[in-house]
Length: 434
Image (cartoon, rainbow, N blue to C red; front, side, top):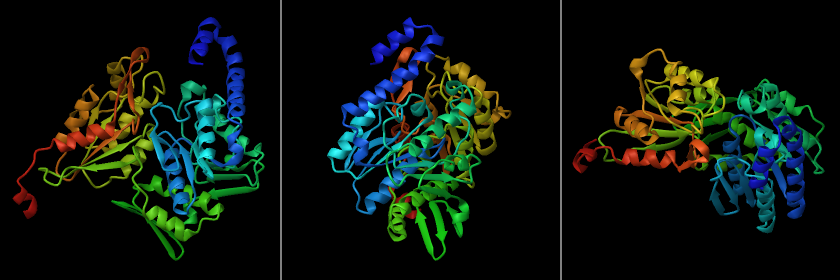
């Protein structure tokens, strides 16, 4: 398929190609669905979309439903999970393709799953990867500018997201559900479709919420739910998951139990600490934050500590507008900034980083280290005792993408852990005294 698509792109002029591609994507989606026997008809399929929070909400819903005794499949940027079987997502895309997704749903049915939770993107919607998936529900988290070059405008980007809500409206399933964050200015637009259940969520649903250094608390009347997820953004992610799961009859007691025991979500505010016998205590945090809004909210989650921030180049060939903006945000919140390589693709990484550096006025708090591993090692070594190293942009991305389709296997988490392990050690007696 990839070979055929590349050949078509080579042979056809761009204007004709733009007319032809939707039919190509539609035909692939139709063929894949019928080849695998339309498996979505035999599952409750819940889609999750938005600019930020999709993967976290997918993981939260999966854990809550499993705590309630359900067998669940989930597909996200992080991993593919069918019951107890988990595979890391190595495709560097959320929805790898129509045949992949339909096969995944088929395998979920064969494994006896009742629910499938699928993270859906605007790029996937644009290429009809959601077509012929009979949806039961859609969760909308939030919307901020992203993929503007790909979609042509923010309006087109939003329209691609809204097509997922339209897909729920057109679904043969009953009851159809739309869950939307109405604190977001675009949230109500995702509820303006004809479905049986429209389920808004907002901070107003809470009596109180509290942000802790090691989690958040959500208070619903007499019930307090404490979860080890950090940051105000995770209050919203939890609300999205709670709203959806309640609509499927999961009790608040079960939800409280699930969120209290929620495992760390890989690449999403994922924390690592220095060994107990290290000469200093350093906490390194890996997060996918790749938009100005998500980066700012991530930094705000660590208000009272010295922060060394490792900031990538936001990806070559896309969203150039946000490069200096993200660097400016880093200058506001970070005590020291290291600009480094991320996914340059066919652009010169030094040129990309130079564009980012234009957003920083205080060059005394800035270093440029192209090699990402060296940048992380330097950040960990220079962080003070009880300081934080915040590494953003890749999360669980498995590769650094270079020119002409080249790629290098990568894991921010593994590099961070190795850097922490290399910190100088103190004698066992000194550790005991401390």
